Length: 573
Image (cartoon, rainbow, N blue to C red; front, side, top):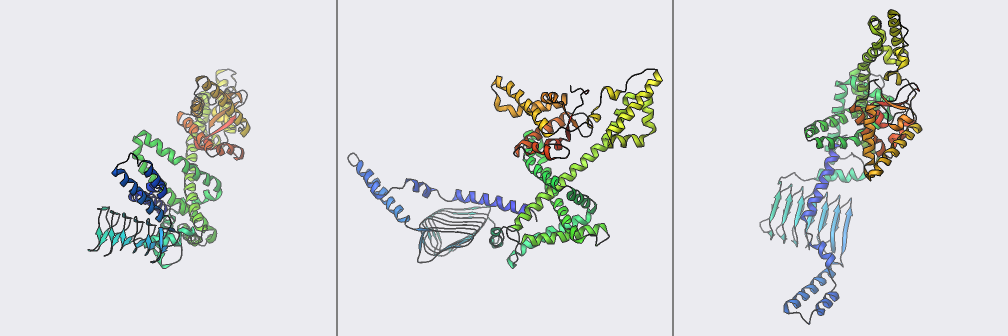
């Protein structure tokens, strides 16, 4: 029910494999590249017989001997198993014995090494090189020509153990019989007895290899306890924050596509934010809080998705809203737990639950911020519309505050021009002048919001003109490698200063904020950086203009802007 366990296992596997590779001697890999056949070694030795001394003759004989041993080892067959145990009988011989997600048992003769990944290594026959176990224990009761390594596991040496190399134990302990012989040293790093990893190995054999988080069986009680513990947490969140969960459920059911898109954007932008915070140095202190916030968002979002699923089954069986939401989360969680036990489908459901949970929380936060900005901008829009009207216009706005602000917030085209025109007419009558209405002379930003939205093709034409312009300018300086960065910086500066780029001016386009305020530097910068995200996913962020009902691209949605086709009488500069 949570992705933290799988992330921990993945990181542990990577670290353990790295340590195991560093611990196992590399001499066999080098020798395999430089081994020669007896005939080649003898020919090389005879080529230097004329001017060679007795030492050279000894070296040639040693080379022939190594060639004979290498030729003899290449005759053996390897025993490799993935997903189950690898076993070598007592009267058999093999080049190596390797098992991944299983245990390796060797009672015969092994010329190279015996290795287990997520399993135990049990050696009772002679081994030419080493015995290694990653996330497992190693038992040796025979002669081993190399090292014995256990990463996150224990090493046990029997009375007949004879280790020519070293004993390396990472995250485990060494159990040694008094009669065991170790010619090399003993290295114990983070020594601790974890009691074995049979529980983890059973989960990998019965769950991971089948592509599911859970399975039925007594050996997986810990996994069910963990899943039920998280389910209890989700039910508690649904009971305690039932109003917030219900609003998020309604948002998710009304906008499932936007919630999924918000999750994708969050995943793509999170590394960028982390890098920017690290670059500033001071922002490093905020990284733990940001990570904690993302974890909390994932957990709360999963409760929302479970509530949405369970509410379809329970309906309104309970009148109490808190109990109704808690029961919905419980029913949805039980359904998901059953889906977790289905091979392949289990992991798909697990990933979708986390992805949709994160997306619905981020999209709900975005909707709350937009509503708050619109609510804060409503009085400012009313004041801006009544500003040119003078004292009479101010008096008109003061006489009807309950109607002016909501009207301008809901329908700026109907409310703002009416207020401005009334105020201007009153001022003209008072001073005996015949000035035309200010709204007709110079429409404000709130009036541009009522203009038609720019479509996909006209915006792409504007972008193409800007790209050509920047390309020509950079071509003269022979710095075309920085075209995208310069284009983004150019766009941010032009949006802040004039609201439109050169291409936008030619195509009569203007970028405006949804709250009616002027574009500031943060908004322009965020919109410019969002363009990289729109371009990164095969340009889907730009294509979104053609399918979005508001004709917004991804960077428009991130920055809270929209591109409109400015009226002919409106100035673009």
